[in-house]
Image 1 (cartoon, rainbow, N blue to C red):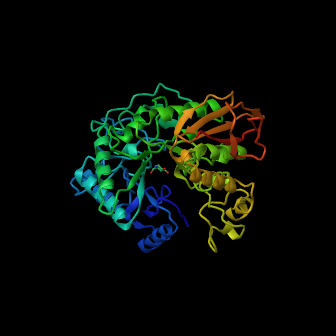
Image 2: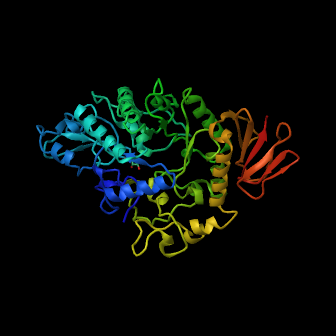
Image 3: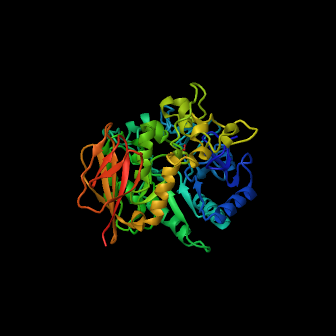
Length: 489
Ligand code: NOJ
């Protein structure tokens, strides 16, 4: 069985991101009572729960679309984006699906095309129709009434496109640090996403979240910066008066090469782009990426955990990255991810392997059932059970970093100061009235010694046993990071 987020009833063409009922739990994962129990158990442990909200599209099997496609006069015809073919019978314009191919599919019952920013099985809702907005805001209310603490808004930028359906221009930029999406990157996405009207919509959504009778809720949103376009557009989703998305996800880091300067430039650029009073997020992995440990290597993954948990902002940790899990081996031709079936280099199954909990059967993930995807490599050795007992494990490192974050307010709320370190070393400080915290991450393949200004620094955490503080100049092993703390008052 599949498990994970989204957990709604789904046609399952895209790992649950093709929803057939936004207010029901996929019966293979339980029901609303199961969800309520999960929420209660989380509460009892002091955890908050955010759920995926998939507003841009539904499943092709959703009753709304089933009605919409029956005829041009259907009650819900205008709930989706329909358009006539071009004169030659082709799609209405040149828009591409994120997963490759045209973003339009011709539907035989009426001869019109429907828009799908992702799979053909994921028709885009028409948010310009007030009935759609009302129905989808009711979905938010449904989950807020049940007690969720907030939402991760999927494909947040795609909700409103150009009503005139103008062609996108060809992209002429080649930003080496931007997320690569293959064919989709050949266009500038001027007209198929990020329409200016979307900001008024997010202000309305935000009001709903802020004004729920039992208290305000938080919104994270997936907004993928476009190659070569800079971060201003991404940052605009905070809202001019910080009245749109609380936490637009910062998805710039996972695409970076293993290069200290690239990380430093990107972190600095994000810090500059976040509006005054806005709060950053830090993302290194997700269910859409290769595992950090496979992208860069296991030591590098530990080094980046230090970065993730010490930068300014809310860290977003993808489950399993705290264990430095590697990609799971998915045999050629056996991809379950629809994108991976089309373009092997984008196969997202690799990072979605089950979590190894124990050294038992199926690594304790499931008993008596076959997991949805193969287990990661070395599941026993990397399991939570084994790592929890090992003082040198990546899980122990993660816990140490979280404890430091809890103990030192400067790591949670202090300012960010970029510090240009020696070549191959990412360096920055977090500062408040009482502390300076210097973080040094050595991206080089050999050890580096880094001079510090002044005395009084203490080594709080390092990602490798090799890091040592000697005569106020920490020696960092290859691909190792260290956190140094100095009291200032
Ligand atoms: C973004 C999600 O993260 C991804 O997994 C999904 O395939 C698309 N949105 C479509 O919903």
